[in-house]
Length: 199
Image (tube, rainbow, N blue to C red; front, side, top):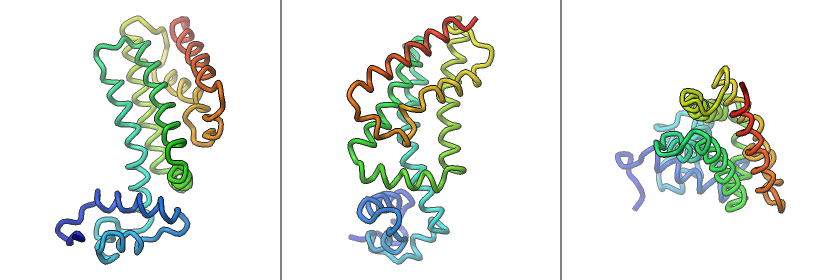
């Protein structure tokens, strides 16, 4: 049964938008297609998202937030020491991005287009959230005496950029190569040693 204007929610619209994007791709997917998939008028969709751009930004944010939420659990894990937390956070980021790229390449390609469109808004906020999480881990490690760094935020930004190759979608083709996990572990070992030896 199609939703009514009372039961139509932003979340239902975003779920339908993701399916429409998977089916048609970002170039051909329209708000009318989303409305048709939901069995409502396109005006009903516009009551939740004022423009097509707003809808595309919201669905992109929803997709990126899945990774942010997964990583937040590692930041908050009280039983992990800071070094393990850094390792697990960066490994989880790589695994999440890699899983998205390899498990559903069509949808990943679609979102690669959308993230390019929203680089200054949604993607910028996503990267800020991620580096803030990493800063929290580095700050905790510094407070515990595990890491010796002058500025946790600067260090977190450096860690994030140093591992770009393992989470930036531009490098997605490399994530299928044999030996990429070993290369990631080697970079991670080097970075963690640097945190300990920074004094």
